[in-house]
Length: 209
Image 1 (cartoon, rainbow, N blue to C red):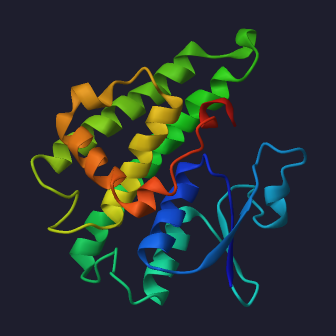
Image 2 (cartoon, rainbow, N blue to C red; image 1 turned 45 degrees about the horizontal axis):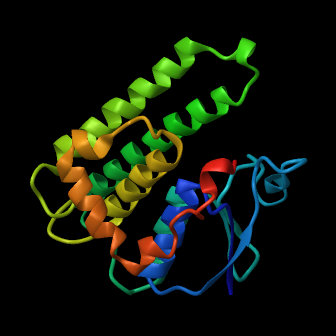
């Protein structure tokens, strides 16, 4: 059986977990954190990052974008990444934007955990601009459509939904629902899917790393 090494608060891991659920792929999850003593993630990923998917033959896959593409290819259930090149790139572009928003939000969190005298307001402002403009782009690209790309649910929606959920967890002063009602509508719809509901961060997640 596949094994996923991940944190329940990671938006990248949540993306993978949702894809596993939507593709009906069985996988055992082991919780770990790059913030644990000695960073145990280095045992599975030389970069010390999560998530990591361990295949049946012992191969380690890392970077959520690589993992979700692998899962989508090996399971015939409901393709989440289109095969035609132009459509595929469009969906992957959504994923790249979502991961970029996550990267910037995580950078803000990490900077604010440093001693106050070492924190850089300029650095935080730079990352916040990425978050703000990334979410604005989500809204612009979505427009009045029901789904992020095309006429059906795809990896674009999964990645975007995970990014918005991570902002609720880590960048709470950004009221994206009031700013962008179309994103609020999308998030509400996604939240009703079992894959999203079952992978929501724990109730006490805001206090976790």
